[in-house]
Length: 355
Image 1: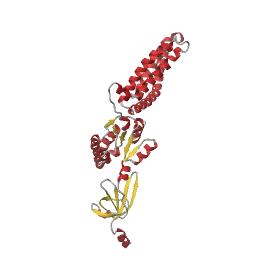
Image 2 (image 1 turned 60 degrees about the vertical axis):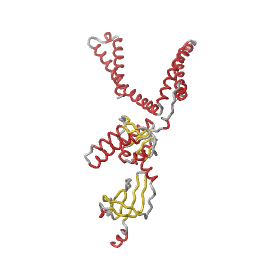
Image 3 (image 1 turned 30 degrees about the vertical axis):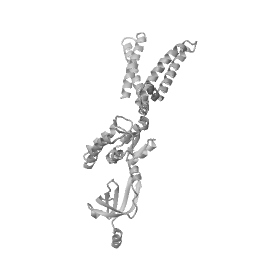
């Protein structure tokens, strides 16, 4: 939107400038008849097109600068920004008074006026922003700075649907302002509208969990609007927004975890937290699990623990729908999750007799 506005504004301005330039040139002396009007119109159109092209470049530069301003503003408290702005106004007044003396200097006075005004105003603004707590105290306002100690957490779609984030927030092990980007909400809505029954249920559950996040967040909750047309996919947009506002990303997506770390964005992986807190399961320990589907390999069954950990049961395919006691043979643990491989008691002996 900013690029379009910049294109239109510069196209109009340069078009009007070209129109005025054409009016000032002696076109009727250079061209005869209607050719003078045609050249005048061509100059105006060329000026408008040049403004349209230059406006695109200016718009992209302004968009980058505005993102930098937004990123800086998100890292400052409202009190710091307000007192800094007041300090800038005071600096401009002082600079205006000093500029009267500077302007009277011989030869260099007029050239020093603008730099002196800018430097004095910036110095006053920076000092006021850094000392905003003391300045507010002088006028009787007590302000406890807390924005710098409250980090911003951008929540990914996978972390919302996973559901464990709500429990983590309730235990207050994860502090900070919880932010759900609007494009994440749109993705949840698309999943909830899916024709696939399982995806539809997951999407609706995710939208319900967003409501629970609002009540469980101990550092505040908000939905942030943001559009990143150059970024493809929700993950790329999430990384760009995190870089813009200096936030960390909460996710269970292993690939997003790696991409964000490469881009220099802090990532809080719920799976890594669960793996760190989960008691170790050792080979030989018994487990009870309900086999709910077939595994990838022959004769395997698959079940899940209450926290979502996958249990692969050797010889469990014939026992679909049954709850059985199994024995742990090995554990595969990674940042993307944990898989526990088990076997039915006596399965090895039976397979040996069959061979």
